[in-house]
Every structure is written in structure tokens, then in C-alpha cells.
Amino acid sequence: MYWRPGCHFCARLRARLGRHAGKAHWVDIWADPAAAAALRALTGGDEVVPTVVVRGAAHLNPDPRWVRAQLR
Image 1 (tube, helix red, strand yellow):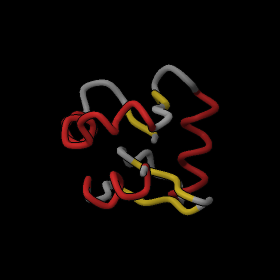
Image 2: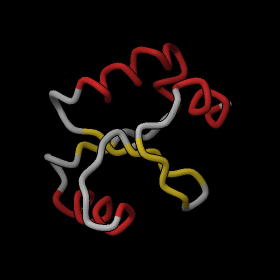
Image 3: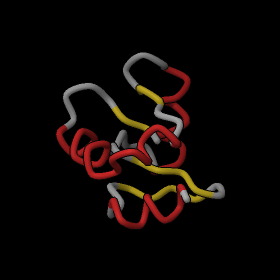
């Protein structure tokens, strides 16, 4: 999951995932320039967060229920 500090959408997703949040790999795009570049490649040049990548497909600001289901 691509995220950045201060993003309230990212914080909301993490909170709504509850105990499942620890199952995801969280990548801070502000701390990792290569991750930011990878995110821009996935989203057509934007740094939209949170972006969840599942099986190579990017999902921008996905529903937390859907993400929990993917983490099970």
C-alpha cells in the first residue's frame, strides 16, 4: 500500500483495516523516491494515496472492506 504522512485518507484506511493493517506492506512515498516513481507509473503520473496494489493492479483509495477481504 502506497501512502504518505499527513494523508487523512491513508489514516482512515489504516484505522478501518484494524488488526488486518499489519498484514499489508505499507510504503511511504515521501521516504522512498523509487516508490513514488513506481506509484506515478501505476497511476499515470499522479501520486494518489492510498493506492493498493493487488496482483499487479492499482486500486486508488479503495473501500476498506474490499482491502480487508484481499488481506485474508
